Length: 352
Image: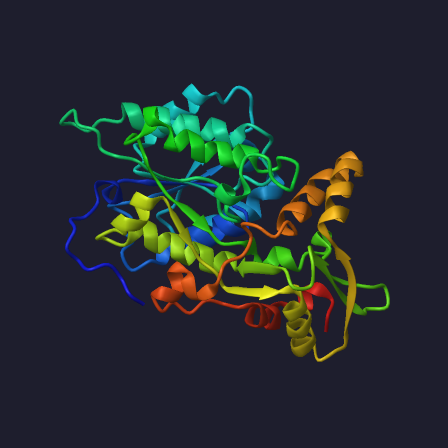
């Protein structure tokens, strides 16, 4: 894989600790790829994993904690609950200061209550503005917000999901605002949908009937595109962007990279599922834009959010991009496509 020409000096943030927030699918993949990256050093940039304080006292989470510790002995832990009202912007910034973190990665935003992403971003900015080294000079802070997904710039503040991602869009606006220019270096990794989520029963795109018949629904239309990337590949790219010793200056300056495991239409998804399972796949209904917009307005409280997500991904904008134009493709990175992932995970979705 291509790496930057070693002409720039080691970035100052790469000689300081890394804070990782979240231990879900992406968070754990990041923990693995950060600590196994060729440039990782437990001395130069030890990794701290932030977890809810209850994780450390709940006996039902003991096995989880043990598995986190097993990933790398140099990983440390921090009890932190972003969603707690008592965890204010100032409290968060103080926690960051205690750790002296040079890079902060947010990897658990999907399940947090509204306002959490902005609160965390404001805390990062407050911390970065006050961060000084022994010389009295700003030491620099890098930040990867919870923006692993669609292109919020294209979606805008009022998107097909009835403003589902307006907070995410607002985070970018906050980071770009004139008063915050130069306060923090930030980067977004746009990856489309997580490949695993594409096959979750709750998502409703690839499902099985009680008779074990496989059916696929389309969001928007059968010719609408979808970009999907595995959590492992997202984490692998992110670790490279964070830890490569000579830095990806252009990427951090431009604040955004696009990656993809695969981009395909829903019609092509049917063909792929059929090829991997060696079974006939039913082309089920199309949840077109009118349908998803209607369901967003009429869905029950417990179903509204999933319909908002479906409306965005079926909206036809900001959810797919050509693989040949991606950061990974231009550097010759081999990423896992739908067929490869599905072949390895077939049993999880009752499609055997």
